Length: 130
Length: 381
Image (cartoon, rainbow over all chains, first blue to last red):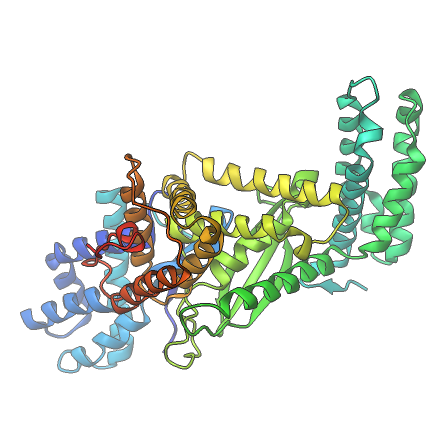
């Protein structure tokens, strides 16, 4: 399975812990969006799956700093989707074939949705790190 | 053939080494070059000399990768002589002393990469001595050094630490165009910061050293690693400068001054609020320890700080520690009773603090302890 590690630059006013807390809060309020993502990727969904996915976000979405340095520009925000993807693969068994690929797509779509909400609602802009 | 020195290209390494040698020559001859017996000083002369050295990064010979180090330094010597002759004659200064010092320093330290590596080896010896006395079992991770050039960075020198396959990788980044005298003489502080603050964080050997590093990094504004530990590392560096970067007194003094300048600018940075508070909390704690434990204060500050830094736990616990100290020591100047005379009492209280932190390291949110009270012999809360 590919290692989904995403690196971002972010304002020094936000550390990884604060960003993660905001992300989890947004995820709790994003049932409709998550349901829509599940419907787009699975042949069927039920309310249990939604709850399990939200639990997996809370327990397995990894957001932390990568590295440390005297110049703020040297520190990146690392979002690792791999633990989250691994956690949701078995949840998709009744609902999808090619569970690993579907899990990865769902994880990416959910993360992109949450990243957009971080920017729109919390004014936390995550810029792709080159 | 372009060879690499710890990651630096040959050409970059030559320029940086030449600059370092020239800076050292300036520092060694500063008094008789730029002041006189009447008490006046020649600041314009110094500006002129430094400007000429700063321009070395654009020196044509850099482009000739086939030039040996000796040939390159010879060309630099000639360049400095030609550029400064008229000015020195006008000022009736002795150019030959400066050039002679440049030659001596260039011979003494042939490579800036090896100079930095030598400092790191000496710092590592110091870390082993201190961590041998840690209350916790510590497994120092393998530490590797990398030097590189970043033309985009705003300062002449910066540092960063990452983890790779269980190793801690310290990288020193140079911007040759901005590599000033202050940049060079702050290098030991940059290196010391990366080592003490980050490379040694979270290496408590609780599980017989799990291969994967439990340290990933921290925010640039982190109150513990970037603030408290940064203040601490400078205390160690200043006290041990002779052991880390042994030099003539004039150079050691400049290493200390420029390191302090670099550190002060970091902690006074108005955009890094938590970092500044962390550094000031360490200062306040040290003051408390001096008042209460007197001659043992310096050693106690180092040992407590290193113990907490090696602890593998949520960053939040270490940040909470900073907050608790800050809240306890501000704004009142409470009287905590008579200074402690017995080292037994000190050891016993320090061990109690360590055990409280170790037992609660997974409960950062719920744990709150009155550290000052604990160290002053009172109850935990």
